[in-house]
Length: 196
View 1 (cartoon, rainbow, N blue to C red):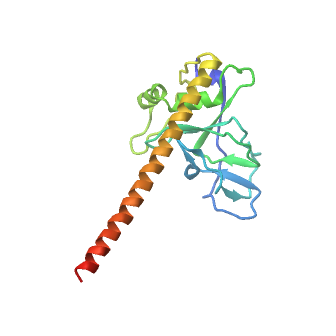
View 2 (cartoon, rainbow, N blue to C red):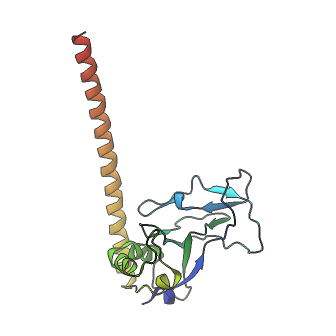
View 3 (cartoon, rainbow, N blue to C red):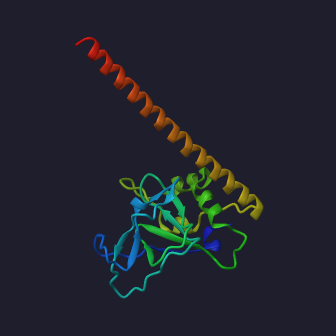
């Protein structure tokens, strides 16, 4: 299938000026700094703004997919939580599964976009040399393999387990480094004391 047959595609909210955090802002904004291909969306520190302009905001909903198509890392992130009055910045495309396409899970589609098969497609169709980017037409025509829902669920669960295992291993490596640094510091201090 082609992704435009499965989803609707919209651009993020157009901001005419740089986004400045306003504590009493009525709208939260997801920016590039708030997303990561593996960790997803970090909604804890979203900037807040007062939206101006005639365009009524298209607030993000649970199940929306944010597509990052600029730069050297092209990826998608799932909105897997309920967000209140939150928009995506203009650097994103927002993919929303069409209501009549219940045979595609949004978390599977995110996995697929981030998977090597889709990444190969993007690398073959990327535009620009200084700052590579995927344009709307390229994204709309991404071919997607859609297995049965049970298989999609299995793929997503296995992927989630892999990410959790990776995070645990990274924590373990950090703790080991911290332990060794402290041990070596004490060893050096002891050596200095013994040779003073």
